Image (cartoon, rainbow, N blue to C red; front, side, top):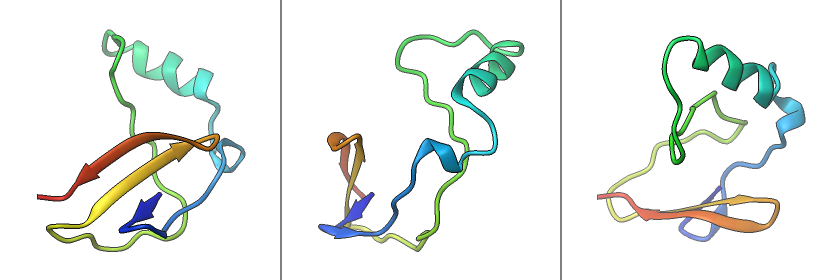
Length: 71
């Protein structure tokens, strides 16, 4: 995760307590998941406050998957 072009967070799925398969399986017991749904599981080190005007960019395996400006 970059905030205004500066790296704020970095991590891998190996740091997660539960695998993707376990998480999706568990959540699916309670709701129907559809394409585009997001499951928030927590965050790696580097959490900090963001403010209006900040630009957030999220990457997975070097590919940008998220870019948004905080309003």
